[in-house]
Amino acid sequence: MARENMDERWGFETRAIHAGQKPDPQTGAITVPVYQTTTYEQDEVGKDRGYEYSRTGNPTRDALEISVAALEGAEFGRAFASGMAAEDTILRLLNPGDHIVMGNDAYGGTFRLISKVLTRMGVTWSAADFSKRENIENCLTDRTRVVWAETPSNPLLSVVDIEMLSEVAHSIGAWCVVDNTFATPYLQQPLAHGADFVVHSATKYLGGHSDVVGGFIATNSPELDQEIGFLQNAIGAVPAPWDCYLLLRGVKTLSVRMDRHCDNAERIVTFLDGHPKVADVLYPGLSSHPTHDIAKKQMKKFGGMVSFTVHGGPEAARMVAGSTKLFTLAESLGAVESLIEVPAAMTHLSAEGSPLEVDDSLIRLSVGIETTDDLLEDLSNALS
Ligand SMILES: Cc1ncc(COP(=O)(O)O)c(C=O)c1O
Image (cartoon, rainbow, N blue to C red):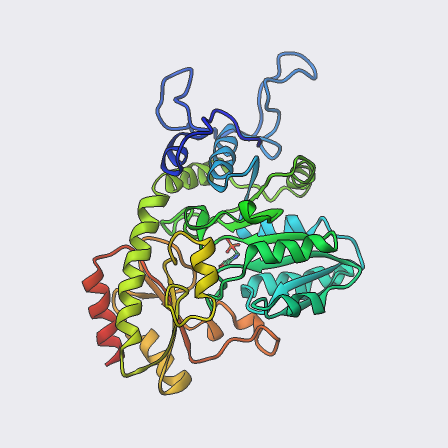
C-alpha cells in the first residue's frame, strides 16, 4: 500500500498513532475497524469500491501497511503472515542460478529458508562476516542479486554498516536487504542509508505483546513494490484482519516501549559486564563492542537484546537459562515480557554444522519493560 493520509512533517510518534489511521468516516470509530470479510460487494460487474477479495486487499491491512511504511520512512509497505513469509516473498524475485550473500550470523530460519528451500530452486548462496567490506566483495559473483543483512544480528548483535553494504550491493546491481527486526524503525531506518528493502518479523517489537505473528516489507521503489505486491497476492501469505489490528495497536506504543527496552538493557549490560561469573557480554552499546562505532552512527539507541557467555560452558549456560523466574525460558523476542534462551539449542538449532553455527554457551536475553531492579535481581539469583 502506498503511503497516504500522512503529513510529511509528522514526527515518529505522531506517525505511529495517526498514519493510515483516520477515524472511521462512517461511524467516527477512533480505531481502524477489523474488516473481517473475505469479499466485497461490487457496484456493477468489474466495478468495485477499491476492494474485491481479502487476499488481494483489506482495509485493516492497508492501514497497517501505511502505518509501518510511514515509520520506516518508506514510500511503500506490504504486510505478511509472518517474518518468514515476508522473507520468502522477497526471495521469490530470484531466478535459478541467482546468488545470495548473507551475513554469517543470520537468523537460523533465514539460513534454513535460503540453504534448504531456495537451493531446491537452483539459487546459490554464500555467508560472510559482514564486518569487513572485502569479506562481502570476495563472495560476490556475476549472479549475485541479493546482499542480505540483519543488523543488529541475531544472536551475536553485530552491527553492519548499511551504507557500506548498500554501496557494495549496488556496485554489481544487487539489492541490499536489511532485516530491521531487532532495531525497529524507531532506532534505525535502513532505507535512509541506501537499502532497497527492509524486512521485519513484525512478531517481535512491532507487535510487542507476544500475541501475533506477522511480517513486513518496505521499499521506496515503485517497481519493486509492484513486484512484491504481485507476489503478495500470487503467493497469498497475507495476515488476517485481526492480526493486522493487533499489529496496528502494538505499533502505536513502539517508541515508548523501545525507550524502556533500551534503558533496561543498558542497566542489565552494566550489571553483567562486571559480574565474576560472566565471561563475555555482547551489546552494541558497549564501547568495547567491535561494531560500537557503526551502531553509534546509524542507530538512535542500542536496542533491547543482550547476549552473553558464562564461565562453565554449555552446562552452565543451560543452568542459568533454566533458573530465572521473571525471564521466561522461551524462543522469540521483542515483547513486553523478558525472555531468556540458549540459541544453539533453541532458535539457532537449524544452523548446527553450518558456517552460521552458534557458540553453545551463549545466552540471549530479550529484555522486557518490567521494573529494572526486579530483572537485575532475577539474573543475579540465576547466576549465583
Ligand atoms: C531477525 C529475525 N528475522 C526473521 C524472523 C522470522 O520471523 P517470524 O518468526 O515472524 O516468521 C525472526 C524470528 O525469530 C527473526 O528473529
